[in-house]
Length: 272
View (spheres, rainbow, N blue to C red):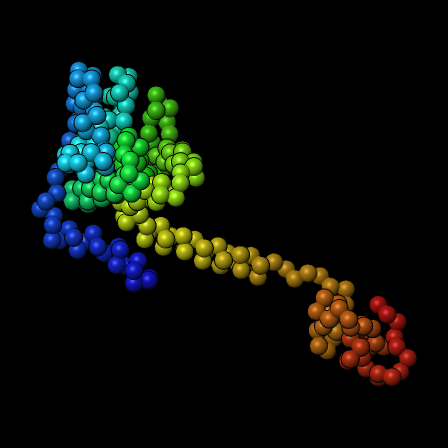
């Protein structure tokens, strides 16, 4: 295993041993609940969301609370969808905390917040796009950890990996259509996913490539050799291995190439 891959895989253990005390149990639950509260306030106070969203220009002018408040803005203002969105984020947060523990799920979330914030500053604009990126990184983590987990969408059973792939398609379209700074901001926004899963995905991809190569070599070796019409009784040359060679049958009934034909210089035998 390359040293840098091992280093990336070990960094979470080293940080957890030193800083596990700062983890907040149920952090993503609190964020999901805040989404519902902000939704209600946005309905009661027009323009309220304008003071919370991720806005690099406003942050540079002193509105530093936006560094945190933007992650509390829900992705929908629909009365129909808000409950689904809150419960979905709540479920994802519980899943990650159960799978990783409180500290690692906290680190993953805060790395996503930092990556999205840096991405917004890179392009000089924020908005709800980075809220989508943050929530999407959590979905990708869930689908990577348990790709076959059943998810029921209006009673239709779907697998977690299907939701992730569908989301990835829209993300890929956004990536292709974005300018270079936008592409960099998008990749930066998913730095939490790359740091947590990148080394594992890289190792699995290399293993899959090696396994494919070994499988192809095995199939090639197990296939029978191509049948030939001529084969020298002495050296084993065929019309495939020696296409310029002449083959003849000798008086003893064996076939020879022109170099090993017994009694060379005598009238040749009948060509087979």
